[in-house]
View (cartoon, rainbow, N blue to C red):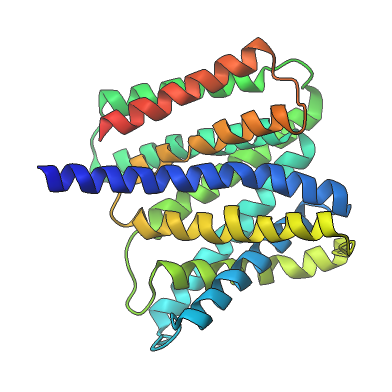
Amino acid sequence: MSVSVDARTRSSVTLLLAGFMWGTGGLSGSLLATRGDLTPISVATYRLLLGGAVVVLFLALSGGLRGMVWTKAAVRRIALAGGLLGSFQAAYFAAVGLTSVGIATMVTIGSVPVFVTAVTAIRARRLPGRMTLLSIALALGGLALRSATPGQGGWRLVGGVVFALLAGAGFATLTLTLRRPVEGLDYQRTTAFGLLTGGVLLLPVALFLGMALPVRIDVLAIALYFAIVPTGLGYAVYFRVLGAAHPVIAALATLLEPLTATILSAVVLRESLGVQGWCGAALLAAGLLVGYLRT
């Protein structure tokens, strides 16, 4: 029993760490877009290309690329990961550009557990448990309150929510399809080459829209942090335990991302959350706690 509890604790902590690091990605991406005068697609492309390059460099220096065999299964897995990561990032930062970091992150990550739970229930031909439904209900309640924060409305909010839901569907698909291991392709290699592939897929559009980055210390520091922490480390940590964790639990763990993004956007970007926004964050925290107790 102690072994299973220890394994559960390690898995949960790892997933929460990934969620926390991702929560800083919306903020750093928003800052990069503002200070670098970049479009959302360009920001997403920089994130994937730089994040993938950082992980590939780490693997090359640590010997993690030795013995890698490019089988058809490995190539298909990398192509799938790259396509999903590229579409997810593009949709997410389009939502950020139309609304705000807090709302885009809330809708994206708030929808992921719903998509994953629905697909998992259909596959198992069994309704989700009460604790799972409760955690999702709390998350949706928090999402509704956060989206109703004063100062947001009109077609930009509608468009941002649509793009955020597309991003959530993409990430849910990523969570469900990358759980099964592929011979010769561990989580680090999947992260490295999946990120690079997604960046290459977005590169033509990003070049057309403009990718010129000002050579300033603050901009380069944000880009470097963006590549290393919320991208390279965040995805590598998530993929590491994705196969061992229940898909619904993995999806629920990402609820820490909107909590982190909400707090950082309020403190750093001075976004006005109001009472509703903070109540929404509290409900998301409750959903995260119930999701952990479910395990």
